[in-house]
Length: 69
Image (cartoon, rainbow, N blue to C red; front, top):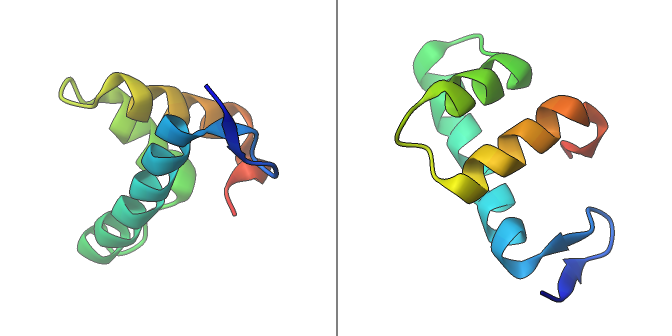
């Protein structure tokens, strides 16, 4: 798969999911009030309905919090 974002080194599938995860954080943060990105990502990983790519991105961001931009 071709890398589409040089700063994150993500392919197009993972780049799309990365953007969706970030958009979802905004919604969750508004709903829960004060929600850290780490807490959000851990909750996302724990959900059984989270897709494979979303789980991979969430785990990647937990290990590499500096990539959350």
